[in-house]
Amino acid sequence: MPTPGRSFRFTHALLREPVDSIVDGLRAVDTGAPDVALFRAQHAAYRDALEAAGLATTVLGPLQEFPDSVFVEDAALCLPEGAVVMRPGAPTRLGEAVMIEPALREAFDEVRHLPSLGDHGHGRIEGGDVLVTDREILVGRSARTNGAGIEALREVVRDWGYTVRELATPPEVLHFKTDCGLLDGETILTTRRLAAGGHLDGYRLIHVAEGEEAAANAVRVNDVVLLPAGYPRTAELLNQAGYRVVALPNSEAAKVDGGMSCLSLRYCRAS
Image 1: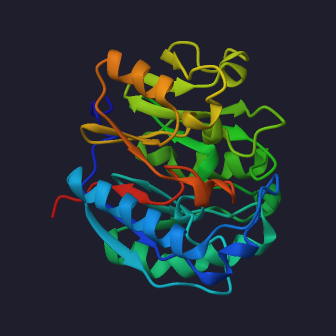
Image 2 (image 1 turned 45 degrees about the vertical axis):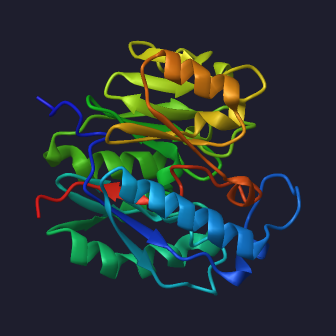
């Protein structure tokens, strides 16, 4: 049986320093280039919030050749049993997974790669499409994650006892977790458009306030929920439901499709 709370109880986090080239980062809609200095300040506040929640953080050095490398969650999946190196669907981001592996090997006794034989060789999967709950791993098929990538992940975590369930991400949504975030082992914060498909049936759902869809990418870290600032009605909904909310400025990451979960790899280590 899965250990209750294993999906949101963490001791450590890996982050990567934002680079000047973030102004060239990928984005679904161009709302202007991020302000690099402000991005760094917001990134520092995010790190401070993780540390205040009880995590020991490690900030990896900058990778100027990879503008999106600050979004470390897409490059790997961290589980209590070990880490899995992802295979990003954006060609310009493939190198990020290679570059983060040494840090994963320092943090974990076991680091696995996705199988590359047969159809899996064409598999693509990014961490932004992967939501780990206390009972299963939900993976949304998207423009960045395909069926072969999901099947490859299913194979690589099977002997760790995980069930991987493939879901559909709405076509207008970049990543599955763009529209949802884990609040506890049985509760998911979600947009109505994601929940409409019935994929999250069986979980307790809290819908973000209308017009505050960008608040859905919240992340539960131990006893707090990190929420992007600027969405007061959703914050109030969570407060009323008994969650302790920490709102963090995220304006610059949002300009390049980044949210609360994207900026760190959170994991639990006994020592």
